[in-house]
Length: 399
Image (cartoon, rainbow, N blue to C red):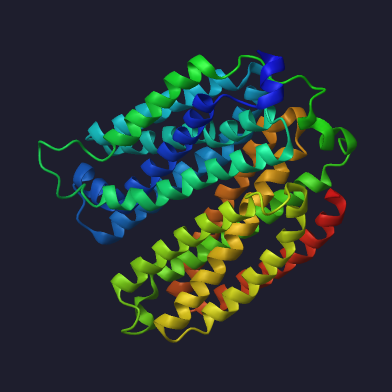
């Protein structure tokens, strides 16, 4: 079986289960997040907006902190034990956390559910990517399968709010929206338990070619993590700005902002599909990171000067395009140079991405609350342009 997989990669049913697992994780997150304040109010009985907002922030932080702390360790465990048990336990834990979130009437258990969801999510997407990395017969195969998982995640983020909108209006005869990610996660767990190889690909495989040449130099991996944090933090900060940008004028109505958020997700999805299409040689993608970060910095500056919805929409499209190019390429090269440490390195990737999102969101909220939107954009633009310099150095080193 190992020789066959080495030549053709993972079977279609296994790849489908990994994609389904990533989709279920993103779907559940995007269902819960917009409805978290109302769920906290229903469970706790609080009616003070400030108190509900505080618990919403703390609960979101619990989810993010759980990913940040646990992802590298779970990745390392998957490097030793194998991918299958970590993926299955992660999906089972994730389903349990969603059931607990849906059924509990206790605020402490609600916190527990979100923390468990974070730990479980840390065992799903990065380990799914590591599984693809282990059994990639060539660079192009890895790139395209990474694109599938990335696309599934983006689609989950887009579909989730549509399902989540029924949380407050569902009838007793309707299945709650969280029923669907629970079912999808359990189905993918069953398929993964039967089809993911127990052992990893032999260390002499193609997957380790880059790692064997640069195993003594950790600066490349750390630089990729820095870039991942910059992209995630910049996009998260802008999303917070966009969500609160009703004060930009009548042209930025709630409907307009909602459409722009949908535009952001759709453009990022299309960008990463194109990046990992047969039109772009996988090894050439390293040269796209620096231009994408430069574009991100300039697009943030454009968005900061937006006074109409049309200009803001243009900035949204540019930011989404830049992030949609840079983020998946960074993930791809993180995997490519990881070698036998796929799980650990991709665990670090999702940890720093989550940290970047948390810091970017918190910093944007703080600056915007003091009317310092220009400062937020200036900081994000400066970080993106600094990342462009790092990426230019990395492109040569990755060669």
